[in-house]
Length: 226
Ligand code: DX5
Ligand code: ZN
Image (tube, rainbow, N blue to C red; front, side, top):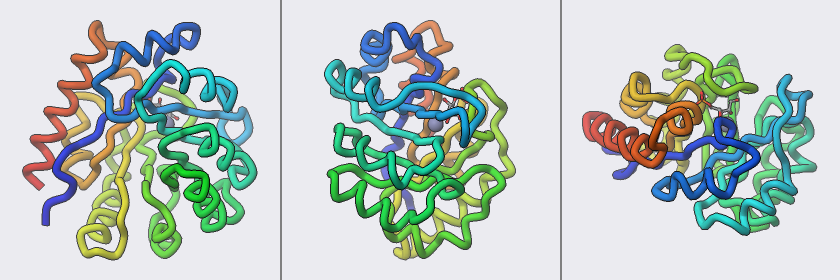
């Protein structure tokens, strides 16, 4: 059974120039979502941007903002991202105390709710919880930094989630994040992903919008084969 017809490409502004975020969003005007990595220096060793930056950037771009919260206590901090106008707010299952309650709060504030799993976190214990979510973000690197190598060994989790979606047990965007580039996106798409985060592969390119289009074409081709 085929998956979603059209892949979605979400450039990660982690690889953009943080002093010029509005321009960097404009540079990928053909993106489906703009991926917004929030890191707190606790859940992950790195520290990035947060709610005030989201609120400011939202004034300068019409691209839906895809917030990936790599933070402790997302139960407390996630709903304000939805209230601020994020299109999708993803929390990490390893950090959440009550993912179902938090998903409901995110949705009640008008955003899609996402659940993310680190490479070492299995999916099976969360298949039931995922009924409350709109997005599953499978990390294909250890969260924390851009520019790392894609971990193909996590693709069985994408395949498992795709089987559950195709069987009608779950309704989810299947998003992959980390090391997505021209040499890895097809394997992720064949496994069942339909939303592709790409940081360095987009913002490291001479023409970020062309990189988005090229990745989309590759993903589309691979999705048609599955
Ligand atoms: C890593 C972040 C990713 C990162 C991906 O923890 O969650 O979104 O920006 O960067 P690349 O595409 O360079 O691996
Ligand atoms: Zn991310």
